[in-house]
Length: 148
Image 1: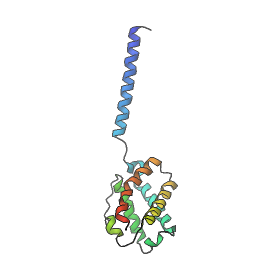
Image 2 (image 1 turned 90 degrees about the vertical axis):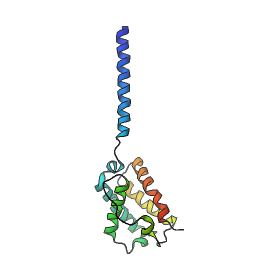
Image 3 (image 1 turned 180 degrees about the vertical axis):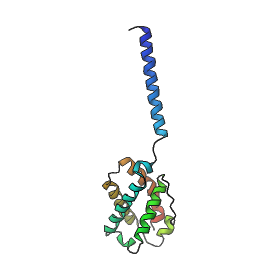
Image 4 (image 1 turned 30 degrees about the vertical axis):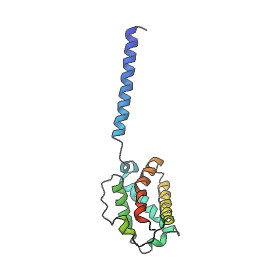
């Protein structure tokens, strides 16, 4: 192989490597929002429906929702999650502290709620990365929800 063809091969390889790295960087910059990766509002709605059903069957915490407007609750949860993960929705409900004030939610109750949400996410086979991101966004609400 001649010097010219070796040089061309090296330059071509460097160009391919450079273009590959640039494409990877471009993909990172344009990674889809969590909203899009989860499947948009229809997927969020399906998960919320399952989550609310899980909570209704959960004797540890279902009493907190005994007098709730379930369709209204579902709609607010969809909007809250949708907005929180980069979707086009706008949550218009109360802030978490006001919404849960006086309910006496304890850490064990909150943990049960999270377990019910994880079960809904697992039912729909939400990948671990997206599940972790979602829980990371919702997790900080704990301080406003749990009393004492």
